[in-house]
Image (cartoon, rainbow, N blue to C red; front, side):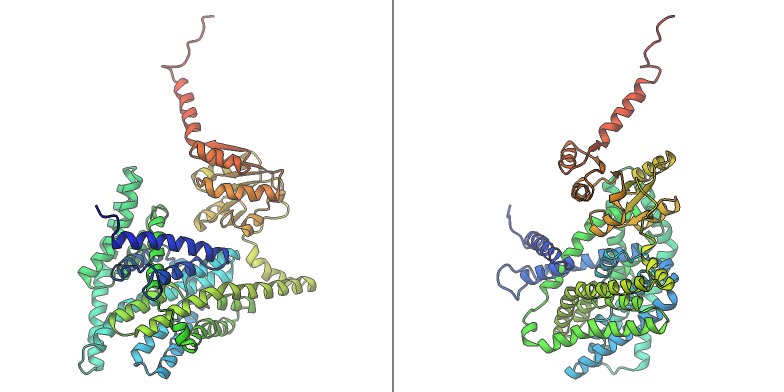
Amino acid sequence: MPHHTSLIAILCVGFVLAFVLGMAAQRLRLSPLVGYLVAGIVAGPFTPGFVGDQSLAPQLAEIGVILLMFGVGLHFSLKDLMAVRYIAIPGAIVQIAVATGLGWGLSALLGWPTLHGIIFGFSLATASTVVLLRAMEERRLLESRRGRIAVGWLIVEDLACVLALVLMPVAASVANSGDAVTFGTILAKVLATLVQVALFVTVMLVFGRRVIPWLLERTAGTGSRELFTLAVLSIALGVAFGSAELFGVSLALGAFFAGMLLNESELSHKAAQDSLPMRDAFAVLFFVSVGMLFDPHILVEQPLLVLATASIIIFGKSAAAYVIVRAFGHPNSTALTISASLAQIGEFAFIIAGLGVTLGIMPKAAQDLVLAGALISIMLNPLLFGVLDRWQARQDAREQEQQSRDAAAILAEDAAAHHVPDSITDHTIVVGYGRVGSQLAALLQARGVPVVVVEDDADSVAHARDAGFPAVRGNIAAERVMHEAAPGRAKLVVFAIAQALEAGEAIARLKALNPAITVLARAHSDAEVRHLLERGADGALLAERELAYSLAEMVMSTPPYRPARAAG
């Protein structure tokens, strides 16, 4: 049996390079996406050394696109959009129009056809979901007013990209038909496409809304985690493939609708969790395969074009967003935060550019410019936020000196949801508000113990707050999140999460902050118990062993096994 095939080679080398360079990017405080893209460049045909199979890379990228769009649909929230609709919808539309116009203008200077320029400009208009959410989470802004505006803005951009994926094949068929293009021809093709999409949407809403949740519930009832994960992936891939084969719509659109309908199921949270590892893996391969398409020589041969493209992304989009947000009467800090968060492009830019090249409505040189602009903007985005953070810190200090009540209210907007009141002391920090953490927090609360919850899932945080617990959203391993939970004033920390390796690193940091704090953790093996104790935990509970002890006690207390009472 051969030990080297093109598929195995590209998977092994792609994952290894992505991990090494992703870790390097993380160490440099850059988004791991930069590392994944550079890994693709290293494995591509334009650099020396290993060259991945160029025919397999686009197919792996397509799977990545399907799972990325499935994830977008799975987390699509109409409620979040409606909460900020009055600024997010018009703001995103105007900002997309401005960025598309600037890209079109640059293409006109290069002599590209109008359609090519519009596709190129549109690919520069949408921000990366991964980069934006990470920046917001690091700064505890997701649940603030400006964070909600940014997320709503992002949802509109995603919907615009979904619409573009529907209309781009129509534009390509008209442009490449060779016949005289008339308004009637364009209208007929658009209507035919919309009819296909409408049929698909109707089938999904009428049948998919019933069948998909029913299928998941029946699969969950089997008790097999493998079957449930397989069901989620089958829905994502099956609906995507079926939509393309039966209705002629894109794979990406089918996957988006599958995720959106699955979002209505009570099992959507479990579906998201179970499909996350596979989605993350193929998302990494997607970025690697995109990097393989990038010719880095353009950075040397066309530096001015690369600079112009990056300027449109970083300055053109940001300026448009800033003006729009200020025009709607929002404060300067909100406008600057929105501008900084949108000053980059990512996964949708790659999808749009790749589809444009495949359909022949965007030149390969434009795709290289998009990729170069994405790399530069993603790398510079943390620096922009760093400048914004320093400016905000000076503003905060100035407002504190002036002791302005209005300023204090604005500052409290971002911190109120996460700040643990100073009046809470000697509390217990419960990390994780799942089935174990929520029960534990309730029991402690019933016994009069003050509890602070740390949880990275938005829905779980909302449930914790509804139950009356101060809750900090984020990963306890992040320094900012750890400080938000006030470990210096706490007496006890309980890790109710099942990730022992992640908990071990956090325990070591907690002990460094407060050596007197008592830390208890949850484990699933003797090796995990040893790891937790070595990292500083005062106690580690082996869940399965404790369950066995409890069941044994219950068994021994039942009549067949209960010891007979001695005769009086």
